[in-house]
Amino acid sequence: MPPWSDSDAAPRKERFYYGWVVVLALLVIGIICFGVHYSFGVFFKPLQEELGWSRTATSGIYSAYVVLSALFAVISGWALDRYGAKVIFMAMGVFTAAGLLLTSQVSSPWQIFVTYSLLLAIGTGGIYVVSMATVNRWFVKRRGMALGIVGLGSPIGMMVMNPVAAYFIASYNWKTSFLIMGLIAFFIIIPGSQLLRKSPSEIASSSRHNKLEATDCDSFPEGLSLHQALRTRNFWLLVLIMFLLSSCTYVITAHLVPHAIDLDIPPIQAASLFSVIGGAAMAGRLLLGRASDSIGRKRVYLICSLLMAVSMLWLIKASDLWMLYVFAIIFGFGTGGLAPVNAAFLGDTFGMRHIGLIMGSIEIGWQTGAAAGAILAGYIFDISGSYTFAFIAGLTASLVVALLVLFLKERKPLMLSH
Image 1: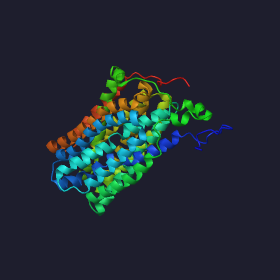
Image 2: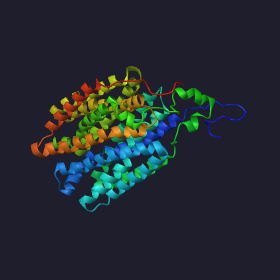
Image 3: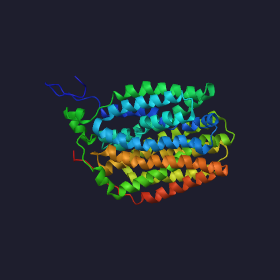
């Protein structure tokens, strides 16, 4: 008999709420998917040298990946509402592993756009949407905390996968590094998906204790349809906010390592900047995610955008490794709080009925901003020989977000009273 069910004779109080198992599984899966997602900067220089391309053209590989990720984020959100997280993550594991393994075997430059840009977009494009929408369905009262824990997958993945990729590139080559990452993805994502359930109600409705836990579990969700969400001001403000925040973030994701190497910092130390960003983002995920439950989502949004602005201002003048580490700490902490507060705000505002599709639609803003930020920074470098104006653009975007956040309308979670 499963531990969450009651015996016929006497109801037995379960020892744990299964939602936390889901949180742990999504955290582990997220470490791999987000680690792969944010590792492109480590491969940037080796790919540029191998292909003989400009930085604009090399950035195009990643920009194509994130544009396609926007499409598959919407598809993943729709599929989550229909089929459940287990099926979606199994498919994501297959495509992520296939994309990495096939990228390790490419022989022509155009093939990278198929194996990396397309297959990896199918595999990892929906990671944020599917993970956060799933957690939104399991938690209400402690939603910010649970989302913050799952959101740790991004910084931990960044901390782990970037140095791992850089080590294998230095020891062997970039193709071997992709091969190893593909094997890691296959043997972690697919088994991890087996711990997920399609609906919390499969567990929550079976025991009296779980009925008491209904303050945490949104088992019978209600909320807006996508059509209704499209008619709200919050929806379009969030799309624009996501676009601007992402354009700033992906200037850093794609170009921080090349920028550091241009400053004569060794590649391994340059890659370690993402470990620092990841460590700071872990603190931001937990502290700001938890804070959003008490001080409100809007205030945390504002804190994140202002921290990003401060970090970009500092980066413009940063010329030594220690200065880049300071940047990484501020930037990481600020960006770290974005994922949980954004997901919690969406759940509070739009409810659970079509949360996957709504989150996937808003994710278009994030992914298109990522594509714009990455390729624009590469173009700015090619015409000016410097990333300074790209960093100024990131600073401006963060300040505009701080202004737009003030116009968001914050609501209490849309849910039945339990």
